[in-house]
Amino acid sequence: MTFDHFIPTRIIFGRGRLKELASIAAPMGRSVLMVCGRRSVQASGLLRSLRAALVSQDMAVHIFDGVSPNPRSDEVDAAAVVARRQGCDMVIGVGGGSAIDAAKAAAVSIDYQSVREIIGEIVPATVRRLPVIAIPTTAGTGAEVTKGAIIKDVVRGFRSGVRGDGVFPNVALVDPDLSESMPRNVACATAFDALTHAIESYIARAATPITDVLAEQAIGLFATHYGALADGKLDAAGHDDLCLAALIGGINIANLGSCLPHRLQQAMGSVDRIETSHPQGLAAVYPTWLRHVRPFAKARLDRVAHLLRFRPDDIAGEMAGLILRLGMYPAIGSYGYVRADLNTFRSGISGNLKNDPIDGIGPELIRSIYAEAFQAPESVVAAAG
Image (cartoon, rainbow, N blue to C red; front, side, top):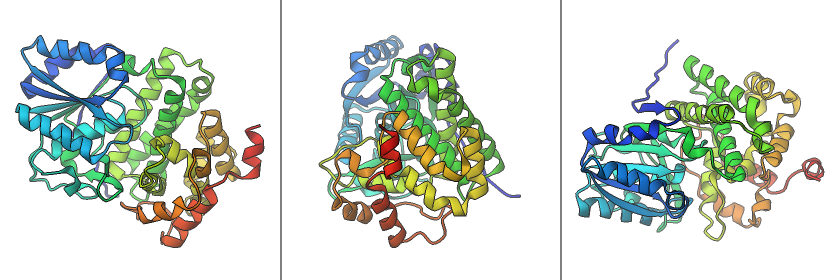
């Protein structure tokens, strides 16, 4: 038995722990680039309170609040310009996975003319980067502990990862108080994202005994609480558990990477006229992928089905039902795409395909999955009412 397990990020988890930010950040730098999205962090007053806490410790705070739901290379470049101009020596990413990915990408591209130079690449270990604190306000992506940042190259129309050990945040500050007020649709979508990380890390070729234990725990936590989440009845303890499941999923993805659905979803970002979230894109292809992958990972997926209380012989159909219950759709066409877009998706596939259990993934299989996933089966449509 041989395996590696590496998670260099310091994890600080628990309600009320946001108040420790200033004491954590002070030894790391004195001039902060704070990266966030355009709306919710400001509207909630969180950005203002974080800035005040840092300023109280005589730290300078420079804010970049222009991150899109699917972060773009020009946004990351603009954030890096602010960091260089202001002499920032650290970065804090606060928000969902998009804001944290943008923060990580800005930190590692500080000495590049553009982050586009490293999209789809492994960043060399010798590259200078700024230290990063990641503060998630959603519970799903696990971006606070991963070594990748998914960014769209707006020149090439190409969406892929900036990856490497230097992309890991230095600190993940996970305070469930910050994500408990998520709207129900966002909470459901991000929880599904966390579930996919657990499933894919459980059946991945690179799975290890450590990641197996973590994946089973994350799937079990999701199974315990997703009904209450979908019904809008999740209590505080359940929310804490889902935050933990998201964190675990991120740890596993950091060590193993993901499987084919994440490659399929990332390529959907190559179509500009439609903006789907990462969980929505995963939901669109997941049941179809499960049908294709089950012959190659039957024992593992049967265990996943058991943990989720699904019928193992219809895990794809059961997953489609779960997706509908969480307020998303298990079909690409449901999000406004047309069949001609599938050609664009296929040309945008990038990243590691060898971690997926399916043998010999190639253009024909990818074409088949996209085509089959375009429209939900009649049985799923009927179940949706």
